[in-house]
Image (cartoon, rainbow, N blue to C red; front, side, top):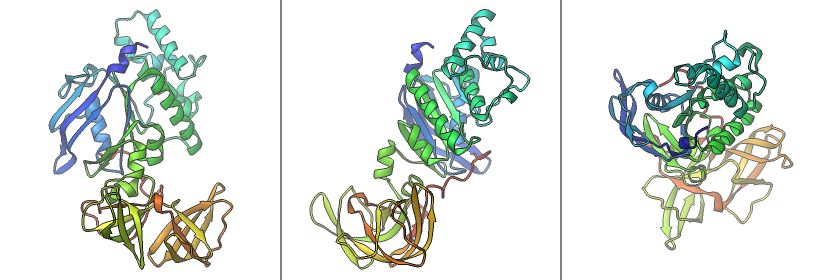
Length: 380
């Protein structure tokens, strides 16, 4: 593969896309640095797939510009953009062998047939499928078919590699393995990649940078650590990692770095991370709670266990507390039965305060990491 693939860069300038009366993408401006894997993440209908399709040239923006490696490609067809896409459905030709599928796009190149075959085999080697040349797609597992789709995109040596929900058709164990393989391949080749998913765990695992989208707009851009630790508002906090969002009040400031917060009947001190606004929500991650039979020195709140679920590596609990309904996780050795009264000790250093997202209401809510991962097949 040619080293020039590492110099690619993608820029979206005030890009919007209108489908009739529906504004699918609303004034999106982002930069994707060369060699990075950047994920477009969000719930169904947030505009991430439409944004990817505009980068690919499969949709044209209603307004705005798209640049690849400094070249304006806004109105260019897909074959003139030097991008390749790995589709959700793999899009392999069932009557062609693996080698023929991988080499399909090379037929339009200047390479002779012998060179095309050699390059297709090189692509199969990259994805660990040496010796699979003569098999048909129907003779492969889902993971192997996805590898063939990746190889077909890679042999074209694109400046930008696009992934459209590439793992959504795989089971959980295979998704974990494949996302590791995709990330390792992207890093080893230095490929600029744009990756679309609705699965926040997948996004956290593979990304240099995540662009969180909501209702066609960019809600926040940041590294996985930034988005998890410093979400901009309740939508991002809820979507990235899951959170209990609890109404609270900032009642004073102790210093430039500390503020006083009232939550229910308790008042305690938090690190100031730039909280603003009159309406505030405490972001309480499911793992930022320690459950115990007695009150503790940390802010603690009485609660009754409504539901206890054992998942092998940990427990999940739904609790009715004096600060609202709380979803919490605990290590596997911390067993509490449903119906028991316990105390929730909050881990102060892991708490964050955010403002409500635009259009949302102040209310206690519970979100697990599964809550916002509805399938987005066919959505804009």
